[in-house]
Image (cartoon, rainbow, N blue to C red; front, side, top):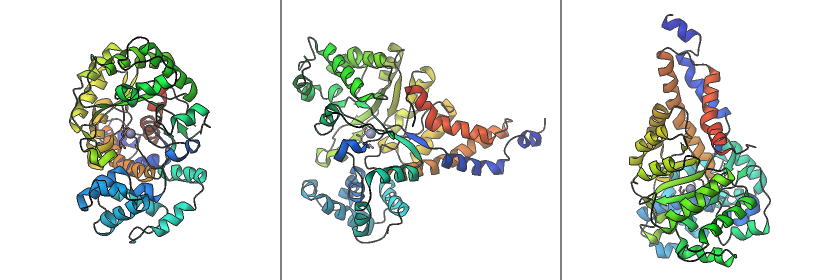
Amino acid sequence: MTNRSVLESGLASSAIPQVVEEQLQQTSFIDVHTHLFMPSLGKVGLWGIDELITYHYLEAELFRSNDIQPADYWKLPKQAKADLIWQTLFVENAPVSEATRGVIAVLHAFGLPTGGDNLREARDFFASQNLENHIQNVFRLAGISEAVMTNDPLDPEEAPLWETGVEAHPLFHPVLRLDRILNKWPEHWQGLADRGYRVDAQAGGASVAEVRRFLADWCARMRPVYMACSLPDTFAYPEESIRGKLLAQAVLPSCREFGVPLSVMIGVRYLVNPALKLAGDALGKADLRAVERLALENPQNRFLISVLSRENQHELCVYARKFSNLMPFGCWWFLNNPSIVEEMTRERLEMLGTSFIPQHSDARVLEQVIYKWRNTRRTMAPILTNMYRLLAEDGRPVTQADVQKDITRLFRTNFLRFTGAASV
Ligand code: FIX
Ligand code: ZN
């Protein structure tokens, strides 16, 4: 069979870019990790221009381009913070970083001025929005069908809302986030004790069973699609520590009991500069032998996994080839820059085929999903186009149905199958 006839039975090489572009645009993605909240969780959910501008990514960039000291910045009211960041990063300097360009893309998506010297018009626009309609519109503009939240059962603002009962929302999936229990037990065991769980500071006695009871109560209350925890670059497994004990004896068994994966996000160096608060975290290369042991010693557990260091990405791909209970997802946080997303995604396609989840937004402010998913589609298009061209050249015709199936798998079914979650 000549090359010509092989190509004839599939898409012509010149047609592949447009088909890829169309399928990326037509497929609604599932945003598997965000810090967005459904409306019934009230003001923990952030949206609007002042939240967009005071995003911790931009706060970190502010202190590089303005002499204000963090301590003085934190004293400012929200709008004054936003005005200072707008003036510094968008008026006095060109908004060329990924995060500043993102704000421009959001303003542009709503037909708002991107070059003005004040935020008045944008503030008026967002103030006039009805939240429910705005969410629908934002998800449509972002090309996502639903978002997975990050819900903290010990958060002083959020937890009482769940405990008194909150209305679920079809576009938002809950997740049980366990950082306070696994990473900050000394500060937070009292929170469980105050709620009637017989735990102690050493996680001794009935603590393990009581933490399992706590997780069972929250699984019944929240019906999470997965449990999750971010972990430091020093994370080790197994480990002689309260985290090691609670992870092995409480969290992993509970995940098996409720049939949900555990999402582990590894590589954070927390608050390397505490003065910057949320913007003060950094990253470190982790020893992924912890992942090897986690996957090997818990074959009945499924792990969504994201690692923060660029230097850990190749290892993660190799471990995912060894352990089918690992599902790599996203280009997390400091990796969520088009140049690195491109590098990671090419490597993952070459090593894992379409058996991974390329991206999540990690949006902390509702409208951020618009630019984060726009960037992802823009980065994915040439990567997938090149991949299909190579496949056709190697002798396998590529059809529109192939492209549609692969994109749906990457951005929807891998997540739905791995979690067992039901989509909207
Ligand atoms: O741990 C996490 O879920 C991180 O994504 C966040 O803590 C981080 O602050 C963030 O916003 C990253 O984009
Ligand atoms: Zn996050």
